[in-house]
Image 1 (cartoon, rainbow, N blue to C red):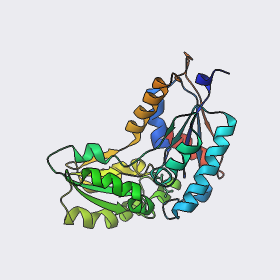
Image 2: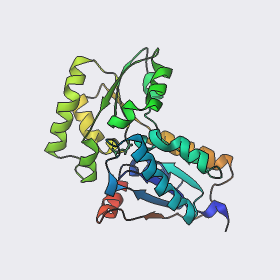
Image 3: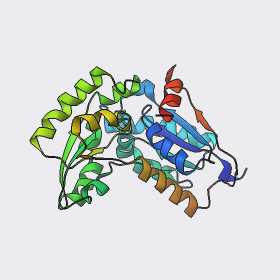
Length: 256
Ligand code: DGL
């Protein structure tokens, strides 16, 4: 089989990776995609690096055995914990990860103040501290771990009073203490509650996420390795079941 017509695999700890998949679909609609969110084991963001790495490697291996031409870890948390290991194992396919979109936020103005919302694991990981090191002279960066936020999205609660209260309590004090110029959504679940974050933060704060940049990087790698499909019709998206009911939520989120 022509490798170019194999699917591209997307992995997340749950339904959050759909926020990255929708960007890839918009950019490369003729590709076939397979998506698996490990909702049965979510959240990843409060687990240890070792636990997350073991789960991620297990799911990646299943994808690889079925035949894929690229693997996208559409999860900042799993990327922090496992991207190096994945790249050393799967050397014959592009392995793309995602990290908080700090670069565009830090460079948007002269020394802006940037709040980075992410899982507790992501903001404590060595990979994030390395990223902070690159931009510490260009911006004031305030990491904000958000335990519990992904769970709302996993339940399909994108616009309920409960998630609004959660966000007000969490973000409110940070917004009043620091006059933030930007917020980075450093977890792939969070773009689904962006309208509420926008409502709480106000129109003057810019909001960044890494979905579009990750999709562009995927396309760049596929192009570079001559792996773009030659199909001329629309591709397909297949979802693998993690826990009952999640596929319906994934399909609904793809249209958000
Ligand atoms: N969607 C994941 C991320 O981008 C993490 C959510 C979780 O499992 O805690 O970080």
